[in-house]
Image (cartoon, rainbow, N blue to C red; front, side, top):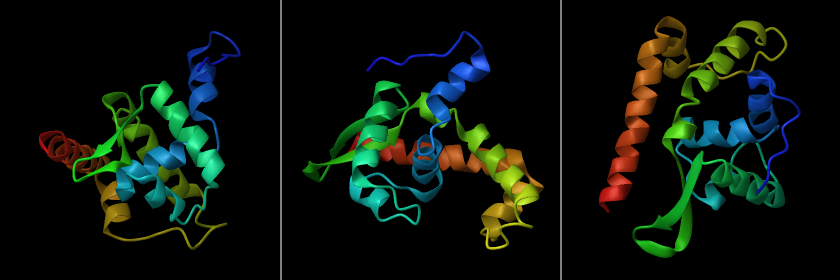
Length: 145
């Protein structure tokens, strides 16, 4: 899969990959919601169409942000796991959450509340460390199976 970059600017180049409407949503779902299977993604609140989901998962795999593998106890089902490259987007996901929490509540008051948001507001580093640690433990469990 060849990616055409608009220019040599590092910000624009990142947006050429990450600026898609669905890419960061899928990464967020994997990182924060534990989604792993195609079915998991299709059942999410974001309601991504299956053809788009399939394309975006293939792109994420081609970019090296997601690894497609098989479930240890069901070799017929694929699962998708974030790689270190994908996991490195955690700070970006967190900053988008903080920005949304700060600047979008007045126009979208239904934005989720809860302990996760409280921790993100009060101690961003602890939130990020906990998310990454939990995900890496999941990866280790999968790799040892």
